[in-house]
Length: 455
Image 1 (cartoon, helix red, strand yellow):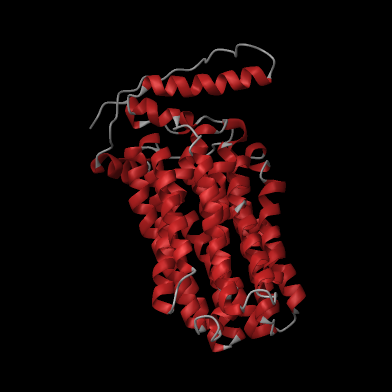
Image 2: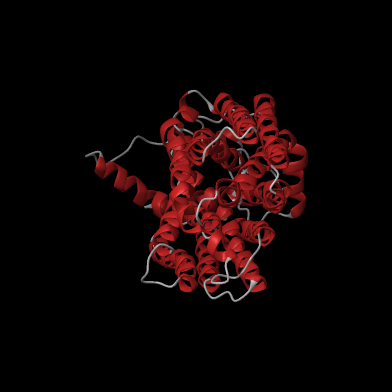
């Protein structure tokens, strides 16, 4: 239930991130909002800017107020804003509602990733985290499929079809909100904040369920202990010291992994529909058909190779997937510039690239959520997501929207090479600074700040 109720966040982000691309043709038409290529690219950047601000605000609140309160609040923000997007009347209103939608999704990242990693057993934390992040692409497939159906039916006029498409996210979000009411607060967060009785009650319930599933009444006792002090909140000076001084190398690692994957992904994802429209003359109502295989390639990657991050290890797998993703993108970009790809082989090439790249991108979130102390885990996720998205993602869609608008294959090729180089750089940094985290408890990777004297 935890994985389903919390992991659906990525599904919603995938739905939102791909809707604009799938609906690009209708949004550009008079029946839509008469947007230009540049407008669509800018709207993608504004969505990501909202995600950046939402992640920072809600991420800090998650460490202060608790995982459960925030993953309910951020979902309400998301479903309200995406429902409002369906009623957009011009570019300004569309961009505004997309920004608020992004704020809800950005806030979800911090609350959800911290809660999942604090509840998942260490022996499978890597694969579970990657597969959960991979559900982003199930959302992408839903968005593409919905747009394909809604834009190719005579039952709903095109002027209303795209509005129904944005309403899908709100309906899913409402169902998930009800499911999340049954989830517990993170026992780790409760312990650090002195709420021992609640933490014990939650863990007792989990242990009873496990014991019953194994046909026994008891489980082996815990063997390791740590001594902590009550930690109501973490002052900014402690956050600064932990991230800039005590864990400087890890901060550099988290920043690099987030920036490089964000530029790589967002630059391509938010303009893929535009590339199909301009360079391959794909009819607007059929865009979703070509986005579906791309989405499944992304989801199948973590599903099939995610377990290697727990067995082979974090460093070799993260570095390897980053570097291989960059190399594959460079090769495909050269073929695109040379005009050697058809619409089919272009879609197939992207699917192969993102089979590998989706695991790489997901491992960036896994890394950041594992390597920092419990008290600042959600804020660390938010901060590096913000840095990565702002530096590598916010400008990417606008830049590539402009490049596509020029109609120049050469300029777009150079842009894609930049994304390829970014991923290779991320892999090299992981090879030197990566942290061995497979099979280890979160406290073994990094002890909570509450285990030492307050500064």
